[in-house]
Image 1 (cartoon, rainbow, N blue to C red):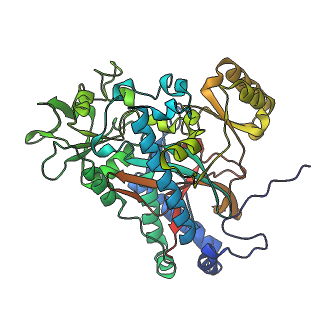
Image 2 (cartoon, rainbow, N blue to C red):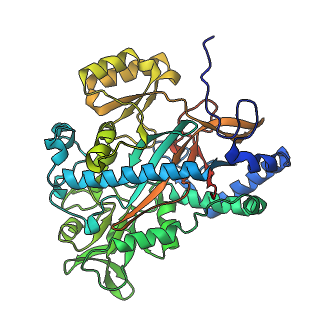
Image 3 (tube, rainbow, N blue to C red):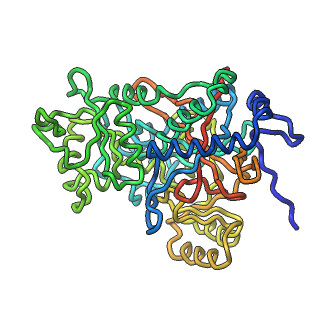
Length: 475
């Protein structure tokens, strides 16, 4: 047998003693019976069912709506560690906004030879309709979800930058709400930074990005594709928590050069639209003519400065996985600093030497689609069968530019409540970032996603992953 990989356990050292962030929690845990934890876990599940915290799974007839698994062992991060992450995330988000402004205007990064022109020009996420357009306040990515993984003490990597429409923030908020109900004594014992102000921060941040035509208090609305969307619960939840209207495309129309929503008093102008609809469906006149989800003419209003769309159309190119491999260059180019947060080493399969290496080492690598998300269309080489490897090899050879490959990282683990007691499972972290013209707010913690299957590295809910509450300790 070969050597088993050693994973960084965030809760305990190799000798079984608690790491400092978990010291108080482990002391409490030693006084709790396993049967009581199981009872609390069942109570949490009932709470989630009653609240309707579900997500849809596409392409599976027997399971279109599921309860997301919730694990009640929190993931705890030290206040100093968090400060380092905040600095790195802020730097990265500023660079992404500068990059988006540049590629839709002067394209200086291409002229400087730091990024190949074809990666932008031939990228389906690049929107020619955004060339020359500056969003209100110069903000492209109003809400960002930066996916981080950990491999050791103070060793964090950015796995991807979700700059289009990052989801999952409702789970972060509901996880905390559930934990507060289940374990009030823990929160009086351990000083955890609060996150309940996220909806009010989101509302304020979006309001600061209102267009110049806005007079008075900005009207904010959330645009949803509707009830059958996988994240509909979140759309409705955030609209309710922000005190904003939840609208669908048919509730909106262009009136006198503004986008207006239907109300009992007639059509009223909307200043900021937090849209949870992909670019191609947002305007049938400018993009997909078949779209029934969008608003005809909304892009014309947007280009003339009549409305703010959050996030801006065309931001998807910043979280494209081929562009991701250039993020250290992008950060350095726009900030003049070395990237604080590291990238995972990435092989661009479009490049012949990289493709050769990937094909020769397919069983050791993780291969992802350039535009993929949600854990779909990826190969985890070490866990794949010979048949799966052969099928993916054929895909790579047929369309190499559609893929990137990365080494399999030794992701850190946090215990979950399993059948036989506490057992380690791999986790990632998605902190949520709110960007306005004058500030960047990062919620302390974010959504910890956890692979519920032993040994699995795939944490996406669509692939059977669950979530945990994330505690950032007060310093």
